[in-house]
Length: 213
Image (cartoon, rainbow, N blue to C red; front, side):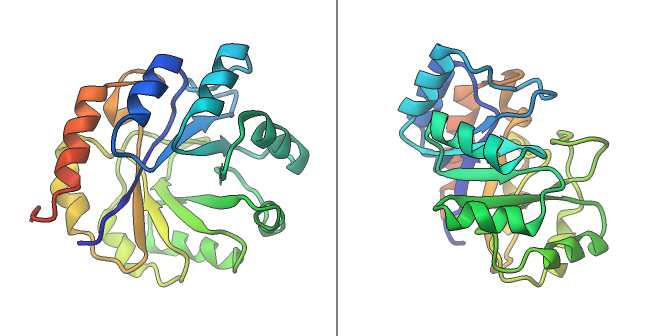
């Protein structure tokens, strides 16, 4: 199995950020959606902690304007922008043209939900497939991952929604050619925005092993 990219999302606490970035992760995500329990407040400690993060920094937004996204991207020195709302392809393309890597999230419950990705041709670097739920953001539950076989697009994707320490085997068995990475969040939390470093370290060590069946 090819090595997956690992994204740990919903970070906020400066010390917790420092401990997570010391692990073998590729991207660290920060939520800028005020309705989320993992929302990042724009205080000096948070700004400095995120700026100093050495991993690829991902900002998560929901239905923000171009100007609002760019303001936070500059303030926190983000390199990836993850859009979780009803953002149009034009917005995605505009952000990408400005040099950011764009991740567009899609809620999945049935095969027909993949058709929404067809409205985003050549304007996103990656898609993120999450479990459909009321409102925006994750539900902490999984959708039927066998549906991934029905995704026929060319854009690589991250898998999200209900990933936890007990699903290593299922994650490792996914063989889709566009399967690029995994998004880890609530399944590894002590409390909202506070990650269990030990659980993540053990999980990452196992998922990186090439002999997992």
